[in-house]
Image 1 (cartoon, helix red, strand yellow):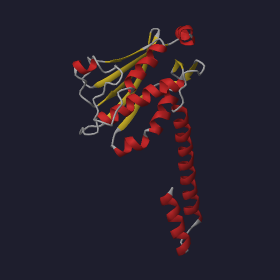
Image 2 (tube, one colour):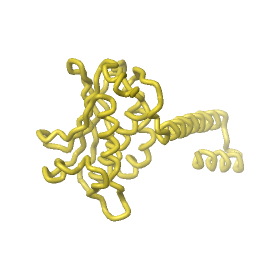
Image 3 (tube, rainbow, N blue to C red):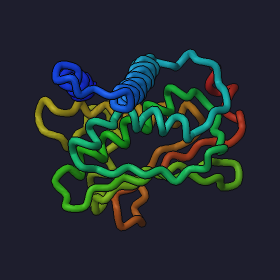
Image 4 (cartoon, rainbow, N blue to C red):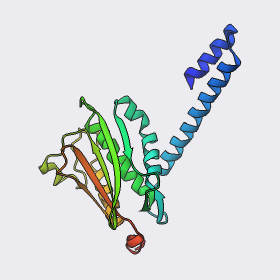
Length: 211
Protein backbone atom coordinates (compact mmCIF):
# COMPACT_ATOMS: atom_id res chain seq x y z
CA UNK A 1 0.00 0.00 0.00
CA UNK A 2 2.84 2.34 0.89
CA UNK A 3 4.53 1.62 -2.44
CA UNK A 4 1.34 2.26 -4.39
CA UNK A 5 0.76 5.58 -2.59
CA UNK A 6 4.36 6.67 -3.18
CA UNK A 7 3.99 5.84 -6.87
CA UNK A 8 0.78 7.88 -7.10
CA UNK A 9 2.44 10.80 -5.31
CA UNK A 10 5.45 10.67 -7.62
CA UNK A 11 3.31 10.49 -10.78
CA UNK A 12 1.05 13.32 -9.57
CA UNK A 13 4.08 15.50 -8.76
CA UNK A 14 5.69 14.93 -12.16
CA UNK A 15 2.43 15.26 -14.07
CA UNK A 16 2.68 11.72 -15.47
CA UNK A 17 -0.38 10.36 -13.68
CA UNK A 18 -2.90 8.83 -16.09
CA UNK A 19 -6.45 7.67 -15.50
CA UNK A 20 -5.45 4.05 -16.17
CA UNK A 21 -2.60 4.25 -13.67
CA UNK A 22 -4.87 5.87 -11.08
CA UNK A 23 -7.56 3.20 -11.49
CA UNK A 24 -4.94 0.44 -11.33
CA UNK A 25 -3.51 1.78 -8.06
CA UNK A 26 -6.99 2.26 -6.58
CA UNK A 27 -7.82 -1.36 -7.41
CA UNK A 28 -4.56 -2.52 -5.78
CA UNK A 29 -5.24 -0.45 -2.64
CA UNK A 30 -8.78 -1.84 -2.38
CA UNK A 31 -7.45 -5.40 -2.60
CA UNK A 32 -4.83 -4.67 0.09
CA UNK A 33 -7.43 -3.07 2.36
CA UNK A 34 -9.79 -6.04 1.99
CA UNK A 35 -6.96 -8.44 2.77
CA UNK A 36 -5.98 -6.50 5.90
CA UNK A 37 -9.60 -6.49 7.05
CA UNK A 38 -9.78 -10.27 6.63
CA UNK A 39 -6.49 -10.77 8.50
CA UNK A 40 -7.60 -8.57 11.40
CA UNK A 41 -10.97 -10.35 11.52
CA UNK A 42 -9.19 -13.71 11.56
CA UNK A 43 -6.81 -12.61 14.31
CA UNK A 44 -9.71 -11.34 16.44
CA UNK A 45 -11.44 -14.69 16.03
CA UNK A 46 -8.37 -16.76 16.85
CA UNK A 47 -7.43 -14.87 20.02
CA UNK A 48 -10.84 -15.64 21.47
CA UNK A 49 -11.13 -18.74 23.63
CA UNK A 50 -14.14 -20.05 21.72
CA UNK A 51 -14.83 -22.76 24.29
CA UNK A 52 -18.33 -21.43 24.92
CA UNK A 53 -19.25 -21.01 21.27
CA UNK A 54 -22.14 -23.13 19.97
CA UNK A 55 -21.31 -26.34 18.11
CA UNK A 56 -21.96 -26.10 14.40
CA UNK A 57 -21.02 -27.42 10.98
CA UNK A 58 -18.63 -25.24 8.99
CA UNK A 59 -16.43 -25.38 5.91
CA UNK A 60 -12.91 -26.51 6.68
CA UNK A 61 -11.63 -24.69 3.58
CA UNK A 62 -12.71 -21.34 5.07
CA UNK A 63 -10.83 -22.03 8.31
CA UNK A 64 -7.69 -22.95 6.35
CA UNK A 65 -8.00 -19.76 4.29
CA UNK A 66 -8.25 -17.70 7.47
CA UNK A 67 -5.25 -19.41 9.05
CA UNK A 68 -3.14 -19.04 5.88
CA UNK A 69 -3.89 -15.30 5.79
CA UNK A 70 -2.86 -14.88 9.43
CA UNK A 71 0.40 -16.74 8.76
CA UNK A 72 0.85 -15.28 5.26
CA UNK A 73 3.74 -12.96 6.14
CA UNK A 74 5.57 -15.64 8.13
CA UNK A 75 5.17 -18.13 5.27
CA UNK A 76 6.51 -15.62 2.76
CA UNK A 77 9.35 -14.46 5.01
CA UNK A 78 10.52 -18.06 5.48
CA UNK A 79 9.93 -19.02 1.82
CA UNK A 80 7.52 -21.79 2.79
CA UNK A 81 4.79 -22.91 0.39
CA UNK A 82 1.43 -23.90 1.87
CA UNK A 83 -1.04 -25.95 -0.16
CA UNK A 84 -4.45 -27.26 0.86
CA UNK A 85 -6.09 -30.30 -0.72
CA UNK A 86 -9.57 -29.87 0.72
CA UNK A 87 -12.92 -30.05 -1.04
CA UNK A 88 -14.67 -26.69 -0.89
CA UNK A 89 -17.88 -28.29 0.40
CA UNK A 90 -16.24 -30.46 3.09
CA UNK A 91 -17.98 -29.73 6.39
CA UNK A 92 -16.69 -30.52 9.86
CA UNK A 93 -18.55 -30.28 13.15
CA UNK A 94 -17.43 -28.49 16.26
CA UNK A 95 -16.26 -25.05 17.33
CA UNK A 96 -14.58 -23.39 14.38
CA UNK A 97 -12.41 -21.04 16.45
CA UNK A 98 -10.96 -23.84 18.58
CA UNK A 99 -10.32 -26.11 15.61
CA UNK A 100 -8.79 -23.17 13.77
CA UNK A 101 -6.43 -22.72 16.73
CA UNK A 102 -5.25 -26.31 16.32
CA UNK A 103 -4.50 -25.79 12.62
CA UNK A 104 -2.87 -22.42 13.29
CA UNK A 105 -0.58 -24.00 15.88
CA UNK A 106 0.32 -27.01 13.73
CA UNK A 107 1.10 -24.92 10.64
CA UNK A 108 3.06 -22.37 12.66
CA UNK A 109 5.09 -25.20 14.24
CA UNK A 110 5.81 -26.60 10.78
CA UNK A 111 7.08 -23.23 9.53
CA UNK A 112 9.51 -23.00 12.44
CA UNK A 113 10.59 -26.64 12.19
CA UNK A 114 11.55 -26.48 8.50
CA UNK A 115 13.02 -22.96 8.38
CA UNK A 116 16.54 -24.32 7.80
CA UNK A 117 15.50 -27.02 5.29
CA UNK A 118 16.39 -26.75 1.62
CA UNK A 119 12.85 -27.89 0.78
CA UNK A 120 10.15 -25.89 2.53
CA UNK A 121 6.55 -26.94 2.04
CA UNK A 122 3.45 -27.66 4.08
CA UNK A 123 0.44 -29.61 2.83
CA UNK A 124 -2.95 -29.74 4.52
CA UNK A 125 -5.42 -32.38 3.37
CA UNK A 126 -8.70 -33.77 4.62
CA UNK A 127 -10.84 -36.78 3.83
CA UNK A 128 -13.92 -38.39 5.32
CA UNK A 129 -13.41 -41.95 6.54
CA UNK A 130 -16.59 -43.55 7.81
CA UNK A 131 -17.75 -41.62 10.87
CA UNK A 132 -14.68 -39.39 11.10
CA UNK A 133 -12.92 -36.67 9.14
CA UNK A 134 -9.16 -37.07 8.99
CA UNK A 135 -7.18 -33.84 8.65
CA UNK A 136 -3.47 -34.18 7.91
CA UNK A 137 -0.87 -31.43 8.31
CA UNK A 138 2.35 -32.61 6.68
CA UNK A 139 5.59 -30.72 6.08
CA UNK A 140 8.95 -31.31 4.43
CA UNK A 141 10.56 -32.35 7.70
CA UNK A 142 11.85 -35.89 8.06
CA UNK A 143 9.72 -36.93 11.01
CA UNK A 144 9.88 -36.76 14.80
CA UNK A 145 12.07 -39.12 16.88
CA UNK A 146 10.09 -41.75 18.79
CA UNK A 147 11.38 -40.59 22.17
CA UNK A 148 10.03 -37.09 21.47
CA UNK A 149 6.67 -38.34 20.14
CA UNK A 150 6.06 -39.98 23.51
CA UNK A 151 6.40 -36.60 25.26
CA UNK A 152 5.26 -34.15 22.60
CA UNK A 153 1.69 -33.73 23.87
CA UNK A 154 2.77 -33.24 27.48
CA UNK A 155 2.31 -29.74 28.99
CA UNK A 156 5.49 -27.61 29.01
CA UNK A 157 7.46 -30.06 26.84
CA UNK A 158 9.23 -28.22 24.01
CA UNK A 159 12.12 -28.81 21.64
CA UNK A 160 12.47 -25.07 20.98
CA UNK A 161 15.14 -22.88 22.51
CA UNK A 162 14.93 -21.02 25.80
CA UNK A 163 12.38 -18.15 25.69
CA UNK A 164 11.06 -19.38 22.32
CA UNK A 165 8.32 -21.87 23.15
CA UNK A 166 6.16 -22.51 26.21
CA UNK A 167 5.51 -26.16 25.43
CA UNK A 168 1.77 -25.62 25.82
CA UNK A 169 0.71 -25.41 22.16
CA UNK A 170 0.39 -29.09 21.32
CA UNK A 171 -0.91 -29.91 24.79
CA UNK A 172 -3.78 -27.45 24.28
CA UNK A 173 -4.39 -28.76 20.75
CA UNK A 174 -4.57 -32.32 22.08
CA UNK A 175 -7.03 -31.20 24.77
CA UNK A 176 -9.29 -29.44 22.23
CA UNK A 177 -9.24 -32.48 19.93
CA UNK A 178 -10.26 -34.79 22.77
CA UNK A 179 -12.99 -32.39 23.90
CA UNK A 180 -14.41 -32.67 20.38
CA UNK A 181 -14.47 -36.45 20.66
CA UNK A 182 -11.45 -36.71 18.38
CA UNK A 183 -7.70 -37.19 18.55
CA UNK A 184 -4.41 -35.61 17.53
CA UNK A 185 -1.49 -37.92 16.77
CA UNK A 186 1.77 -38.09 14.84
CA UNK A 187 1.74 -40.41 11.82
CA UNK A 188 4.88 -42.45 12.47
CA UNK A 189 4.53 -44.32 9.15
CA UNK A 190 4.95 -41.14 7.10
CA UNK A 191 8.38 -40.34 5.63
CA UNK A 192 7.78 -36.68 6.39
CA UNK A 193 6.56 -34.96 9.57
CA UNK A 194 2.79 -35.41 9.70
CA UNK A 195 0.19 -34.64 12.35
CA UNK A 196 -3.24 -36.24 12.00
CA UNK A 197 -6.33 -34.63 13.51
CA UNK A 198 -9.39 -36.92 13.57
CA UNK A 199 -12.84 -35.49 14.30
CA UNK A 200 -16.33 -37.06 14.36
CA UNK A 201 -18.42 -36.25 11.27
CA UNK A 202 -21.65 -35.90 13.18
CA UNK A 203 -22.53 -34.19 16.43
CA UNK A 204 -21.87 -37.37 18.39
CA UNK A 205 -19.69 -35.40 20.80
CA UNK A 206 -22.26 -32.65 21.48
CA UNK A 207 -23.34 -34.05 24.85
CA UNK A 208 -19.74 -34.51 25.91
CA UNK A 209 -18.77 -30.99 24.81
CA UNK A 210 -21.74 -29.40 26.52
CA UNK A 211 -20.91 -31.00 29.88
